[in-house]
Each structure stands twice: as structure tokens, then as C-alpha cells.
Length: 372
Image (cartoon, rainbow, N blue to C red; front, side, top):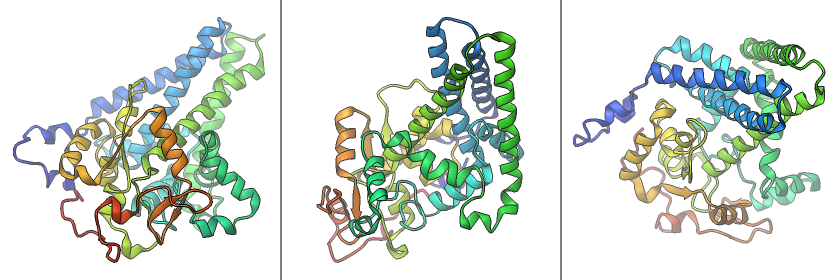
């Protein structure tokens, strides 16, 4: 169990510590499920079977990719298994199905995103432009931002902003300078990706040699990958974008409590159909302590809510509230500390109003009680 969580476990919750202990048995079970779901769905997709079974298998294939991502994400945080060795190599293996370099992901996610969550200039996960920054953009980039923050932006946001430029190969200027430390993981995903493609083609030749090649490409490759990217984009959007969640552009205004507790959203799903995904959405607990394994996040989040209920933004996923978020959260005024539309008109309460603070003062982290 993480030290920061252990230090705040209340004495009247004697069983709480047990709820946060990593379990290699659970970790292996989820890994076996992901592998089995991937292989079985791939076999059905490439086979000559009824189209209904193929479509169901496309969904199962997407679910398996999502579980692989969750496993890889936790492994890179060294949180999934009790053994660091297993976390390192299973993380590489799981991210191979996503064409993610684990070392590049660690830089973008663990260091940048978790290091200073919601601090503009460091954390760039759905980081909003200010009205001034938006007006200075070329027109094509303004239209792209309008699409990203519209109802269909999740379809391409992650691929365009992260997958291809940041977490596959060291193309970015900051990663090119240190390409040697990313070489092995980037080389690994190239080889692993080639093996996955060879496996798909081999199964197709073996099980359905006369079938359509382009249909296999769509059902086993493009569609599940696009669906997973859209789901991931939606996930990180609702985890960090909300009229009640605020961003910062000065380090002196940022703190662990402002970024990780006040700056992330506890998202409640109406139903859980993807293993571990419901836990993933209990996101404030993960940011408060990323060493808590994903299968323990629900217990950790409930504990965190009991301690900091007024400071935690909770979002129960439904259509109306989601559209309210999309309409309100276009740009962010870092001076007034509120969300605005694309014309710069405020669409949310300010940070000061949200936390009942005087407008001429800024509380960085004066409130004790964060789990860190």
C-alpha cells in the first residue's frame, strides 16, 4: 500500500488498508482476460462467420485493447503488480497492442501530466487555450480546436495530439534530444506491431483464405483502434474538463491539492461493461496517489470523497450534463480564472467563487488534508 494513503487511514476503518493492497492474482486475472479476449475476438473477426458474430467480436476486440491500455498505464506507474520487474515488462507488452512506447508514455503522462496536473505549459492533456491565445492561432488551427471541443472531437483528438506525435516514436524536439533512452521501447513496439499484423494475416490465410482483406483491415484493425482512441479521448476529457475544474498558468498558483484533488473529476458511470474501466473513472484518487492499483481505486475514491467532498468535482455521466460541459468548456481565462466560449464570454463560475475565496487572494495549498 502507498505510504501517503497509509498515513491517512482512519482508525475506524480497520479494513481499509486491505482494500488498497496490490494483488498479483487479480493482476494476472485481468491480463489473462485481455489476452483471451484479444485472441478470441481476432479469430472470429478473420473467420468466415455471420456478420453479427463479427460485429460483436469487434466490440470485444475494442474492450480487450482498452483493458491492455489500463494494464499498461498502471504498470508504468509501477502499481499493477507487486514486482517492479513484472510492471516493467508487462507494461511494455500491454502497450505493444496500442503501439505505445512505455518510456515515451512515462514522459508524457507520469512526468508531465502527473507532475503538474492542470498547469498550463507543463500538462498539455486537454489544456485549454486562453481567448488571447486562441485569437492568435492561424484559422485552420482555430477550426481544429473548435472541432476538438465539439461533440465529435474525441474521434481524432488523441491520435492527432498524442498517439502519432508523442507516444509512438521520439519525434518531438524534447524527446529527440534524448532518443537513446526511448530507442528500446520504440523499437519494441515496431517489432511487436509487426508481429501482431503477421498474426492477423496468418490467421486470415489459415481460417478464411478467400475472405476480403479490406474487411479484415477494417474490423480487426482500423475500427477497434479508432473506437479505443475515441473512448480514451472521451475519458481524459471528462476527467479533467468541467466548469467546476480550473486550470493554472503560474507555478506559484499551482499545488498538489489544486491540481490533483480540485483539478480532477470523480466520474460515475451509469453501468460498467468494460473490466477496470469503472475504476479508472474514479480519477481523483488516482491523481492523489498514482501508486494505488486501478482495481483498488473505488475504495480509495470513496475515502477521498469523505475527506474532501466539497473540493472534489463529481460527474455522473449522462447526456444533458455532458453537453453542458461541452458547451461551457471551450477556452479558459487564466486572469479571471473561469471557462469561456470561443468569443471569450465567461461560461462558468470563477475559481474564487467555486471555492468561496476572496478575489484578491489565492489559496495555493493552505488547506491541510491532501493524501500526498
